Image (cartoon, rainbow, N blue to C red; front, side, top):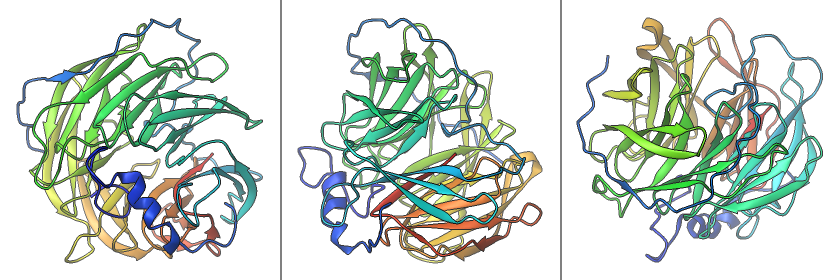
Length: 420
């Protein structure tokens, strides 16, 4: 199951991830614009590295969080803050591009502010560490990534990812490299970031050729590519091969070297990995078998160890868990469940080593594809793909309880929310 609304096959094999989502677009409601086991040993086996010129590395920027968004702060924010919304533009009822809005950090109220056009299927977004640019995937058969200058919101251009159906991207903490994951072709790519925030030509592309696809999968499906908190390792989560790959990035040439692999149980379908602020543990959402796992992480080696499967708290059936977020203080974690239309709340215990299930809260929309916390951790935003809405919750800083903050904000085929 892809991160879209239903089954997906690689390009050339019938339904693609993008086409299936487009077929469902007419169903969206749109009224306004926008303790851990050791990993299994597995020999390295990556291929498909295109030759590319070595770029001159641009100046480094401030550090970013592993999610690619601005570094978290626990201090309350004053005045309206920016909110960008990723959408699908394909099919009836789709968006027109990247949604632009603002939100009140005290009340969570969202106000529309237009659209950045000229980007097709910008289904995932990330911001440069110093705020100079916004980046979006172009989730199409001929995949690309697009840079948008900030604050003026001018499109700075697009670059090919060398693969199909890119669904995730993040910015390296140095601010010099953009990392992206091609879902349909099962590969990860690296692009240099220029001083203006624009992107240079791709410097590396690695396809996950082994291990063999897991049960029910037709091939590799890279779903996330992110930098670990130590800054020295990159982790790629592949739903198709039931594997999390760890790479080192040559920060001069922008090339990747695989250093380890961690295997989930067959058929888990790992989708999204989120680190605890302490940097020694991470939480993995498994889309295909409706479970989550706590993973140990060794910063010195980049080695991830996958723990036992745990419940999502959504009962029987498959609820297609999408993604975790963890509060800045590391005390609570929230999981988006698309089929169950809920957010599972966990208490984080033992310095990040344990998740204790607390409850599941209705999300107030349909098919929550993506969730994000505001930089101060006081608000949680859920982008609900099928209802075409973004719901906002106030996060209790002591109990971790979620309380709805105002009415849902309408945004066509909302699939990503990026509060700044």
